[in-house]
Image (tube, rainbow, N blue to C red; front, side, top):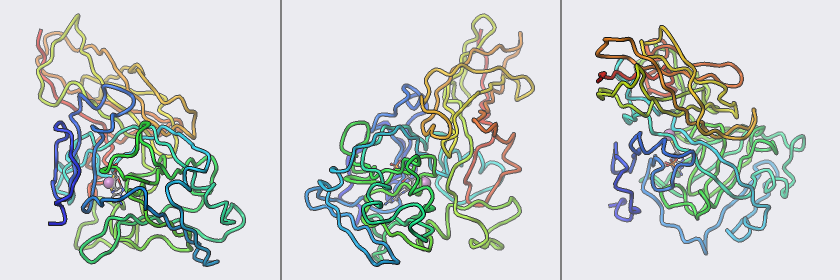
Length: 376
Ligand code: MTE
Ligand code: MO
């Protein structure tokens, strides 16, 4: 069994699949703090977790054009200036279970917790590449590919790539991370080294990083070419052409209500209800406002941002946690709560899932709607 050597996991993580292991924490715990504790951070594995000895670990870096190659051990990576950023990572399939209700989609049925916010420390990718003479204006490469040390039965590694502009931008904050929240990265999250590509979809944040390839081409891995792409609502499995859509990189603005939960019976105090959740946008865009409704989206009230990434647009890589006390109509026994967030480019979320449905159930960022019963 290739899954016989998996790490221990926190009992609160609810698995949607066990082999490979995929799990998310309960919503209430998710918004307890701005920084998600390592043991509660959602896990998204496509393959068995590799067992890597940090003392013999090697990272290969290759430039396809010059055929230059470099091998870095963990101690070599640690010689570079240590850079720390707070970055949210979100799976492209977060909130897929809501989109499925419109019409079935293929993929793990994630709730709203396939997202987490952590402090990541490591060497900047641009510093490592600069040492090999790869700098802005000095290379005609277009992509940087990443390969994991996790492999499928045919021995193919997990792989993904990002545009060269993001990799070389000193403000892009792409880091070869060896710490998560001040500790060695846990096995499930990429021990000993993973790339953090802030503002970019989870799938490109390759764990158990084994090889970096600077190239004219995108990664040819399945997850770059034939998955993690968006399509129009009319495209289905009999008509889809994966070559026609670009790979997802920066994610759109999203938010979710974490308290109360769907179907919960909630206490109304002085005609008001307490609501709490998170909001985040990709590409370093900052959350500038969160709106909450208790009548399905007819009337809105601005939420209070409780805790927030201190960074400025366009380097706001971390999420925001918000709360609101919203009025409900007298005498009502039910309410539909909704949330939508606005980012620093004034992008906001679509109203419903009908118009963003796609066959893989990715980019599920319509208003989050939660139906509750009201108690006096
Ligand atoms: N990297 C490797 N090597 N193997 C993987 O299966 N999954 C990707 C990404 N990096 C994956 C990977 C996906 S789809 C996501 S959403 C994130 O890791 C999840 O990161 P986490 O498990 O630390 O939350
Ligand atoms: Mo993902």
